[in-house]
Amino acid sequence: MKLKVNYHTHTKRCGHAVGEDEEYVLNAIKIGIKELGISDHAPFKGISQPGVRMDYSQLDEYVNSINALKEKYKDKIKIYVGFEAEYFCEVDEYYKELLENKIDYLICGQHFMLMEKEQVYVGIKKDNKSAAIDYVNRVVGAMESGMFKYIAHPDIILRSYTIRDDFIEGQLRRICEASLRTGVPLEINLEGVRAKERMGDVFGENFYPFPSFWKLVGEYGCNVIIGADVHDPEYFLRSYDEYAYQLVEKYHLHLIDRIDIK
Image (cartoon, rainbow, N blue to C red; front, side):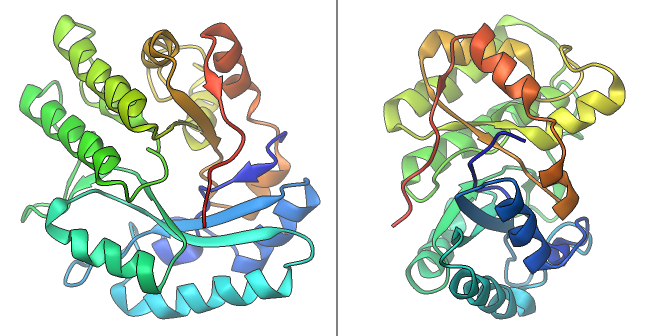
């Protein structure tokens, strides 16, 4: 892997990743990563999703573990502790509290509509216009909130809205316009690339990164970042980022090499 920074890294606490925290750090050092952000799926008070996100009771242990590694390896790598989180304006104060007292940064990965009684995954409601609008509204809200450093796999909505029509193009353009307006980067997601490789469809439209979306991003000139989205320390040692760089070249994407975390 060619990456020198990565801010999208999970831990086994989410229930669908493996390995110890220190293994992620050691393998990142091994391939020459200079800045590593650990950003497991954020827990929410009163919401239990085993196999999806850590329990709220694990929050402090998670933060303490990453901070200990931050100190232990400070001469070899810059480490940040953060969360990948869905955006809900209803919990703005919780996000602000996390950023002020617990973590270094947030990235937005809008997987679920968690504030509903049903915890609905965005890929479930097939070709549903209202669901697509809701997804885009929340992603745009995340960018406008000023609390999120970038949008993870912004094109995930194309997993559920499979029709390539004027409606969905208009929604995708709203994401690009908000990114351009706010300066919040959009992520080419390498976990998606791994899935596309397994499908034998790296250059196709069956999974993110969706070329049709990144073609639009190139037209707008939005900032773009590559996120490894690793769920296993061994992923750092594999070369599956080539497709991301091909997307950058093909669609003349404005790739940035790091984000500013104070």
